View 1 (cartoon, rainbow, N blue to C red):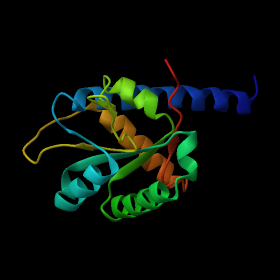
View 2 (view 1 turned 60 degrees about the horizontal axis):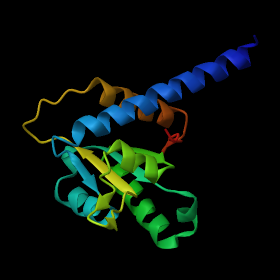
View 3 (view 1 turned 180 degrees about the horizontal axis):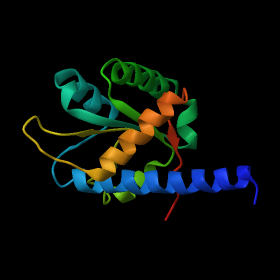
View 4 (view 1 turned 45 degrees about the horizontal axis):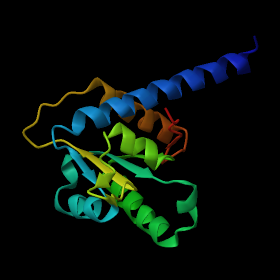
Length: 157
């Protein structure tokens, strides 16, 4: 096996590990009320209390690439997060995100806006999550390689 093949296997294994960590972060933050869902709701939360935001997830599906308004919102949210040292991830599968959040993508019969998800921790919280540490480390390492907003391809399950 060549070095490139070994390195590729490591990258796939590493990405799988980050995906599992992201899923764990979302599943553990949800029952604690530490998730903000929606572009507008996220913008309000970032404006009010950016210090409690520990992760920003920007999610799209193939159809969303052509949505200019959504891309403008993403650009503004990304700039704000970079300015406030908030880690950002791009995720490509809103249906999978809805599944991870336990069907939180539906509000009654209406589809919720899962294009932006914030993970927060209250000021008084001592919430220590090893999975969050792994996701944040992935974001830091990606920035060191000049990938400011790493992309995660969430597989269907």
